[in-house]
Length: 118
Image (cartoon, rainbow, N blue to C red; front, side, top):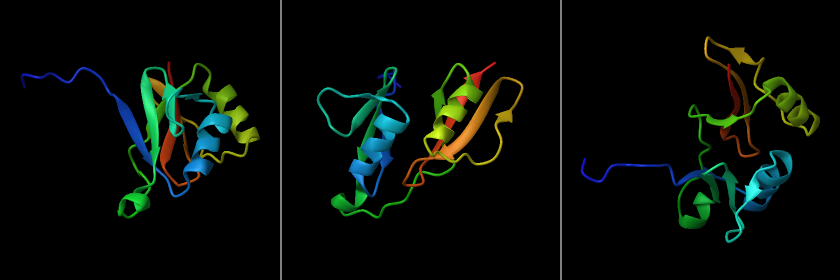
């Protein structure tokens, strides 16, 4: 391929209620809001873009089995903080040889995870 892919510009996150999603990503997860776009947020250099498929004539379907891995330095502390804000995790924290993962969903059912490299 001549035009090499060099980075990930954004992750599109489908929603049935952009305002509810905005509150979740800003207030619950604490993502940094974009200065120019109300429904975009930043995790490091990656943009989360909330969009409503039904407003574009498409059927809403939550993103499943492609968990967006949100890096944290202390997975148990981050998990406890989110649980205190009402986030329900899908089982116990998973440990494998290289990392820890704690799975949860956003209010629309999109799969997310807290992720911590050992």
